[in-house]
Length: 251
Image (tube, rainbow, N blue to C red; front, top):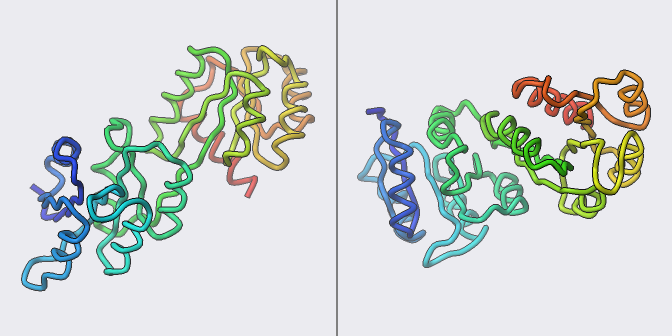
């Protein structure tokens, strides 16, 4: 057993047990069911301080980002926020306030144990999760892209739109990059890039196409795509790298 001490602040016994299961072998988990109990535990000078705090945002005595604000005011060890909601805006706000990471409860893809270890040893700063909009009407191709990005240590959060029109409409939600199919129900070919570029402004666009066609690739790049990759020939590591580089160049 590691010598890490993890303070888990969670009022749901089921969620607490699941977190403990995922943290087995990582460290000793101490469980509080309210914010006031957790703050009292942190203030207890007669007990060893926790290495990390895992904080649910919906507690009996505090809800939402105010919970995080009150916890951070106590100058705790690194705080990782856990939430039952898939709320990108809340995730961004939590990271901006000083949370080390934002983890969706019950999501087996999130590397909770690794995040706790990194936070405890101080090797990771706030973990920015890049929001990616995938515009893809093929369910199979969307699943493959989702799995590829999910394998990247939770650095990407994927939202799927099935048509160009839906993708354009969802841009207002705020994204860091776009993965764009060229064969959609409402638009086909390089024109898809032209129309998305007009709506997305400077947002990086990575084209994922079923066609291995140099001319089409060139037209897409001239229309404003940041990169062009053929579906089926790109492995998860390459996809992650292409998206990350596109985001970095766009900053």
